[in-house]
Image 1 (cartoon, rainbow, N blue to C red):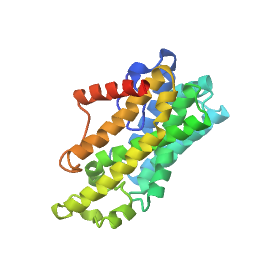
Image 2: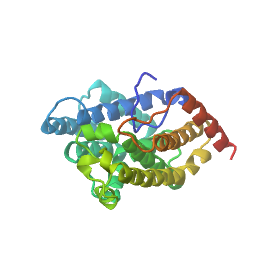
Image 3: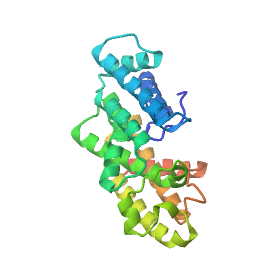
Image 4: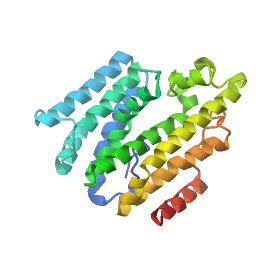
Length: 272
């Protein structure tokens, strides 16, 4: 599939059935380009919000079956029609991207969960709809996996986000562990930072394990892919622990040998 990595897009191309590739590419293009509008380049906040509003208007046109659409939205409209996809996840994604333009801090964990419910969970929900598997239990577990993935990405990218003047660790948690927001990576705060990150890693791991039964319930390719997603997220948390939580000096990421371990663990999940 000729697309690049999108942090909230938990379906890998090599396990995707051919019949779903056009729909997944259309959803990806929508989400990736809208996320880039919110995050990349040197546009002003007003320009970013205006561009995202154009995406919102295009979605409304698709819903109403009105107006001529740009090619990207034509492909999205075809995917929505072919698979009877709900519109709310797309609106939720745009809501989260608009929030990225205006919000750079989250006071509580509940505030961050609300953001993840719109920035990450909609992707999992759309994938479940594509595979005709959007039952109540599956959606619940998918939400846990997707939110966990988003939290893990935040823990990986603390330094990257800090450079963008964003902090995705709740302010309440920073205060609880006495870590100054303006000096998270300072040498004098290192012991407190490790304690904070240990807490954040444990919480993200617990949430991932909460949703993990979905990866065993789903059959075939999607089940294997989701098991790899779960194990990949858990392996990144281990990598954070292995660098002693110092994500400022070394961003934890998975090498080839890690992916072999992830694949083996995913197979073992299948075997129970």
